[in-house]
Structure formats: structure tokens, C-alpha cells
Image 1 (cartoon, rainbow, N blue to C red):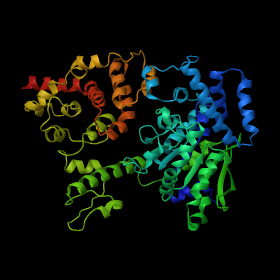
Image 2 (cartoon, one colour):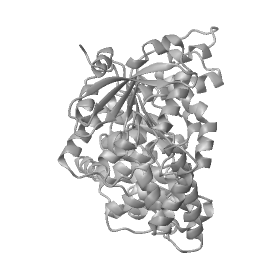
Image 3 (cartoon, rainbow, N blue to C red):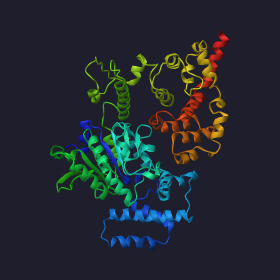
Image 4 (tube, rainbow, N blue to C red):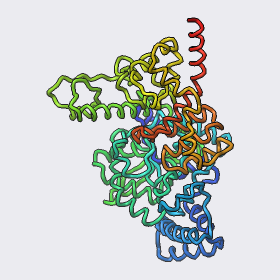
Amino acid sequence: MSSILEKLVENRKMPVLFIGSGISKRYLYKFPDWETLLKTSFYKVNQDPYFYQQHKDELLRKNLTDFEINKALGTIIENEFNRAFFQRKIKIKNPNPNWVSTGVSPYKMYLSIKFKNMQLYNSPWAKKELEEFQKLKNKVSAIITTNYDQFLEKHVFKNDYTVFKRQYEMFSSDSYNIAEIYKIHGCVTDADSIIITENDYKSFERTRRLFIAKMLTLFSESPIIFLGYSFTDENIQKIVQDFLDCLTQKDLDNIHEHLIFVSWKKNERNLIEIRNNITTTEGKIIPITEIQTDNFYSVFQILNKITPGISASKIRETRKVVKKIVDKSVDQGQETALMINIEDLDKISNTKALAIAVGYREDFIQDNGYKMFPESIIFEDILKDNQNLKPEKVCFDRYSSISYQRVLPIFKYAKKIPEKIQNDERLLKYIKSKDAKEKIISKTLMKRIINYPSFEKYEDIEKHINDYDSVNKKCMLLLKNVDILSTEDLRNFCIDLFDDFISNEMKDTHFKRCVLYLDFLENYEEYKEKSNQQFLEN
């Protein structure tokens, strides 16, 4: 008889992963549970354990649940921590002194920095398990997590999943319900979004309907697997109860096959499958499948047998491009020829002929559209080498009227057709304006970044880059320290920032300058050598 996970593989349905702190605790060194986090935070203010215990005992005498006690302690500790900070009794190591004036809670800033500095366990079993976990990026459709840390986006689904840090972002125009991470309790890169106090949880409750609606949307196409939570976790049980209350009886009939808890059981190497129950707020008893194990490698190994027709990141990219084309074309009344998603057919009038094409974006670009495709494709191609663009068409169609004041990579394409470039005065002028480091990172720019810190090694940049709140500022830090970065380091930083660059409508000039400089480092010398060779031959 097939296990519940094997049935999931047979159905070829990419699951949604709902990930809790148990997963971060499993792979990040000294990652604290909730109580430990609260206790160590309090000790920053007052190291006498009796003061912490006094607050906890008072709450226990009110017959509160563990969940309610932790929320109340979070409120008390934030108040105590912030008071001590503003009285200069404690300090926060933040290289950006201006953060205090932003109104962000010092306690949340402390938590943000604490979780940013978490390191991976350096042990063979953790590395082996993590490698199997990383393979899931093409096997799952989306991630929901209550974790603040960056373990998932930095170490598991790096560069392939878009991160949403606040609930209202889940239904923004940038969400496509695929290859996305929803951080419903906030993220360390946005300290103000962190949920830790009673007021934070009240705000979460008020907007919970958005999150439940997103769960319903995802659940319509995918089963949901809970990882890193205790089955008795009060917060998660409440979320699941609210979710189940929204389902029809038809949905509930086989819910045990579509809602799966993988719970940690110490030293258990097998996958013990049991039936458990959750009672909804209306009193319905709903059977849920629970898998108890300490062998997450086997869990990931089974899930990696899922064979979707196309990866989650490709599906998201397709939906994203289609939506942009549809929105722009419908707004402008240009409905003669469209690339259109089936879900958006109702946006198109039936007064004009409609042709529908299905395929990969790069294939359509090769055939036509070089004059019109967005600049983001060029930047993505420089970073990921994944667009298969034709050098001649980029240079002479896309760059047909380029001004030397623009900031667009060119050397990757120019080096392949140097003999043809020599006959184009406009392109030569553009290349001349970008053929040295000093022309890309000008004296004017150097004056603007003079107050940014200088570092000696890559790890220092990695540690501090998220202290800056915009793509432009992060890239100014990179440009200040570009001499200590290898081309691969610079590429990785830019890839991490690429989605934010797109969502900011590609207005981040310094991001463009970083990618342009990467293109210069990797391709200019080859272009120059071939051009000189061409000159000698002539």
C-alpha cells in the first residue's frame, strides 16, 4: 500500500510547503525556539533570571495558554528592551545610524540583526539533508512560513522564488501564486514587519482573511505539507481551523490526503504515518495525516520523485510575462495579436481575431520583438545567461538608437560581432563611453558613495548588505567595495536583487551600473582583442 507521500508523487501535484521554526532550528546553528528567544532577549535588558520568571509566573496565574503567554512576554520584553535602548543602557550593532529615526522598534531591529547572523550547521548529516531539500525548488509550487530568518530564500530556494514579507503583498500585482515565499510573520530584511507582540498578533488576526484566501487559492491546485511545526502548535492549529472552515464538504471528504503534517520525533528513522484529528471552530472533527520522523532526508527524497511538466519558476515567469502583455495590450486596445494566458481570456473582446501561442519566451523573442522586449531580459541574460539572445539583433535592433547616456550591458553581444560593430558610429560611441571602470563608476558616483563603509572581504558585505533598505543603496555599497568582489560574487549579489529591481520598475540605476560593470569585467577584454585583430586584418 502506497504511503501518503508516494500517492502525492503518483498524482504529480506540486505541493505547497508550510514551514515552521523547526526547520530553521534543524539547519541553523543555535537557532532558538520561541521561549528561548524571549528569555535571551530579556537577559539583554536584565540578566537576573528571577525578573523574567516573575513576569512568566504572573501570566501563568491568569490561566493563559502557552501561546498567549509568549505573546504577552513579547510585549513586555519589547517595552523593557526599547526603554533600555533609548536610555542608552544597551546598544545595537547596526552600521546604519539613521535607522533610529525611522520609527522601527529597537527590539525588532535587534531580532532582525540576530537572525541575519545565523549560520548553517557544519555537519555531514545536515549538509546531505540540505542538498536533498534544495532539489525541491522544482518540485513544490509555493512556500508559506512563519519564520523571520532567511534560511529558505538564501540556502534552499535561492534565486528562484520571489519573497513577500507582508500579508497585503500576497494579492499584489506582483504575485502569481507560483515559485513564491510568503513570510506571514515578517522578515529580518524588514524589521518593522516582524510579529512578536500582542499588538502584532492582533494586526495579523485582522488581516488573516487575506492569508486564508491565499491558502485557498493555492490549495485549489496543490496539497499542503506542514514541516517544522508541532501538531499541537496553537497558532498553527488556529490557522488550519480557519482554513478548514472555508472548505466545502466535498473538499473535506478526502482532506487527509491533501493536508499533511510532518512532525519531528526524536531518533525515529522511519516515516510513521498516523491519522490525527483537528476540530474546527464549528465543532467538526477533521481527520489529518501526520507523519512522525527524524529522517527528513527520506521525506525530501520521496518528494523529489515528483515529476511536474514544467518547473515552478518557469510557470511563474510565463504567468508574469503573459500578465504584462495582456494588461498593456488591453489598456492600449492593441488586441490584434497577443500572448495570452487562458485564465485571462475574459479580458479580451470578441471583436477582433485572436491568435494564441504557447511556448518559451526566448523562442518568441528569437522570431520577432527584439525592438520591443523589456530591458529586464538583457539584465537577466547577463546575470543568468538564459535568454539565448542573438548578438546581432540585440546590437542593431534593440540598440538601434541607443544614447551613450544609457546604462545597458553590451560587451557580451558586441564581442561576438566586432567586425560589424566597427561600421556603426552610434554603437562605437556608446561602447567608448563604457570601456573603462572609471567611466562606469565615475568620479561623481564615487562622491555619492564616499560615506558607505569599505570592507576587506566578501563576508563583510554579505553580513551588512541587508542593513540598507533599497536596491539602489545596496548596489551603492557593492560599487564602493567592487574591487574585493570576484565576478561570481558580484553576479550572486545582483541575482539576489534582481526580482526587487524588476518590481521597482527597473528604476534602480545603480543596479544597472553593477550589471554593466559585471558585463565589462567578463567580456570587454575579449571584445577589445577581437576588435584589434579585426583592425590589423583590415
